[in-house]
Image (cartoon, rainbow, N blue to C red):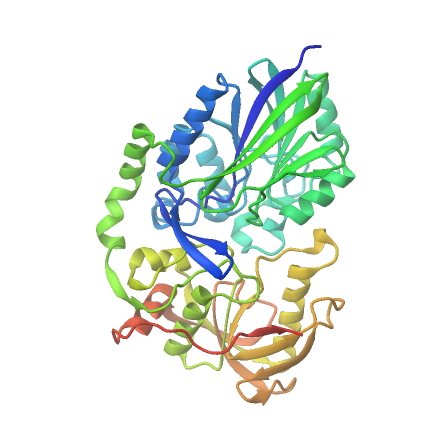
Amino acid sequence: MADRHLTLLQLNDTHAYLEPHPEVIWGPDGPVFRIAGGYARIAGLVNRIREETGNRALLLDCGDTLHGTAPAVKTRGEALVPVLNALGIGAMTAHWDFAYRPARLMDLAGRLSYPVLALNCYEKGSDRRPFPGSVLVEVGDVTVGVIGIAATILDKTMPPPFSEGLRFTLGNDELPGEIARLRDEGAGLVVVISHLGLPQDLRLASEVDGIDVLLSGHTHHRLEAPIEQNGALVIQSGVHGSFLGRLDLTVRDGRVVAHSHRLYEIDETCPTDPTVAGLVEEAVGPYREELGRVVGKTGIPLYRGEMLSASMDTFLLDSILHVTGAELAFSNGWRYGVPILPGRVTMNDLYAIVPMNAEVMTVTLTGAEVRAMLEENLERTFACDPYAQMGGYLKRCLGLTCYVKLENPAGHRIQACWVGRRRLDPEERYRAAFVTVQGVPGRYGTDRAGTGISAHEAMERRLADGVPYMGAGPEPFRVI
């Protein structure tokens, strides 16, 4: 049989960043910041690649698409629909897209021009799938079977409303049968779009035969070359829509016999699609005045992207300590949220830090609970078994200094922990502040109470004196 050629294009973890924005890029001296992303640029580049390949290019989205910026949150994902429909996407899967509750995602999925796939998502108490598991797509003369694997952590570590009425598996048990069915129905190539995370996806590919390509999401890796695992080519393409992955394939007799890969940075060299630019303006325009309001200044870049701590999260925690007077502060180890450069801080920047603008809460924790909570988080971040890795980056802390051995087994990584200048006492009770249920999970602590202060209000109050923010406190985790 003659060789057949096609191109796969990957977006993952765009987090609803509609317009160009600062992005952290790692250089020899640390982070540098460049303007990247924007759906109009993405569309322009995709269109150019489609022309180059004779329309033999299939764009796929690995999820974390409908949530993460103010226009997305304020419209519960609605603002993204016209933009996404204009891109000619073949299929997507999901994670934070469930943040508006499953019923809302089903509603949005019904208005997208392509399917939301989730082979591993079921209604509780049954084997019924609310979303299709796969779809066949014709790309030139190749029939591509696309299978979607949603984030398995949705009913395990995410806020309960995300998985209301649903349960999620890893998808490894379901994949062999789905692959066989798609092959029987004529698929000449099988592609899995997954939101499990790169370590999990590599293990998944090692366990399941018959995957030709696995497009991975969730962990925000910028892979400059595919990883080959059990015959599957695995790629992942960054975060915030700042990058686009391209995989050119030669297929013969249902097998990939040659490939090449490129990771594009979405920068000013990309053409701009005027239609999508207009749709983006329609989505963002109604909020420009509100989001452009200046709330303060920062003298340092505020950004995420580092495992142990991040200046953006330290600012958030410093703010909630400022408004509560608590000893300790905790927040989730979010990976997404574009950088804020030194200078003016706007409301749009506060949405980048906490798009859901959760209420600041307080709770009383014993020293033993603090240690147990941190040990649990360390295991979910650094577990030897990839399937046990269920966190983002490490939980963000302020007021603590912990010395850890990452290579140690679960429950034994913390070597010493200090609250200010005092050793953490298992019996002592500490007042802590946090944002979102992931900051301090509900099974820890007593006297949990709301403050009536939102995360955005806390950050505004922290900046109210007009003095540029310059950081706070030592690094909470030190690896020894």
